[in-house]
Amino acid sequence: MKHEWPLWEIFIRGQHGMSHRHVGSLHAPDAEMAIKNARDVYTRRNEGVSIWVVEAVNVSASSPEDKGAFYEPSNSKVYRHPTFFDIPDEVGSM
Amino acid sequence: MYAQMVKTAGSGVKDRDEMSEQEQDFQDRIDRGEKIEPKDWMPDNYRITLIRQIGQHAHSEVVGQLPEGNWITRAPTLERKAILLAKVQDEAGHGLYLYGAAETLGVSRDEITEDLLAGRMKYSSIFNYPTLNWADMGAVGWLVDGAAIINQVALQRTSYGPYARAMVRICKEESFHARQGYHIMMKMASGTPEQKAMAQDALNRLWYPVLMMFGPSDKESVHTAQSMAWKIKMDTNDELRQKFVDQTVQQIEYLGLELPDPNIKWNDETKQYDYSDPDWTEFFDVIKGNGPCNVDRMAARNKAWDDGKWVRDGLMAHAEKKAAAKVAAQ
Ligand SMILES: [Fe+2]
Ligand SMILES: [Fe+2]
View 1 (cartoon, rainbow over the protein chains, first blue to last red):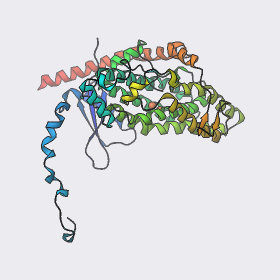
View 2: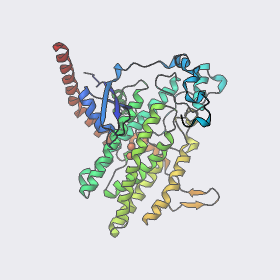
View 3: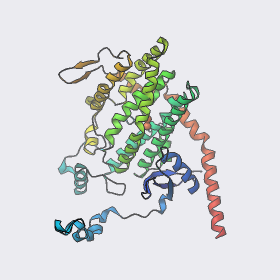
View 4: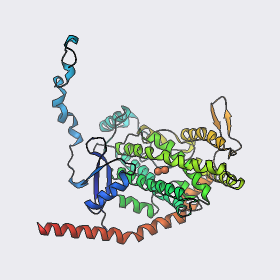
């Protein structure tokens, strides 16, 4: 029987209020084991206080080919950045 | 290194006018320092070479647990035992990060594991040498991990994103490995004359095998140029080896041990140490499978894989049964 354990993507939240971050992947037969293995592999030095696991086949991703066109709409909207507006020094901090 | 003599796929560096437009764009991205990510277009030879390199690197981490695992039960104190255990456990993690990176290139971990077990893939030559006594635990951590660090620090800048990220994680953990080894050496070198002699013996025995980790001399490394253009090799073998010698000499001197090679001398012109080359015939012989421990290492890996099969299958069967019961209950 040829039956490889499925692949899981691992997300860890550290202690300092940041959101969960992708740290890598591992193989495990089910979610429960994936969490235990992630504890052993990715938190050996207090890297986290919360673990999410997602089976890799369930991750949908944007495609790299249309990288340009897909993000183009935000390129032309420079006014979304605060630095677009000149505010005189006299106004104080804003 | 942990990946030695990785054969670069293809027939050497292509000139720009030999490249397709897609290949030119790809090379431009690398030249600009952009990372290549799993779903990006890449030349087949880039992918194939990386699978070989990352796979061999991963296998080295895993096989590398054997020479040190050998001494866990015989560590001189409970503290040293706990430290060595943690170090060896890290190496299992390193193997896992790297298998994960290789899998993003379209191979499965089981596939390349079976390639290793069948002798189709290699691991670093260094792990085919035996660890004879406790002083070797010091010398291995200090020198073997020390040599690995030099290579891995450079690879943090490699062009393939998942490989570079694995290197960053690994490098964070490696200095613990080198320091715990050097600490053992410090203890032994300042111990009884017998202990000091053991430390000297370990250094002498492992010195040349460690120099071999960086791979053959640049004159003989045929495929370096293409791998360097792709930024999956960051420095040449000789450059890395020189760096290792230069940083290690003063560490040897601090221990009060003798240099393992009488030809190690500071060269005022080149501003680096001269040293003797290892015996390359021995190196090629070990690579071919004739080192002192090749047979043992492969036998141990095959046994672990075969003995673990019922556990892998049993856990999978259990998970499937549970999942089916959950579906039935809904
Ligand atoms: Fe390692
Ligand atoms: Fe290490």
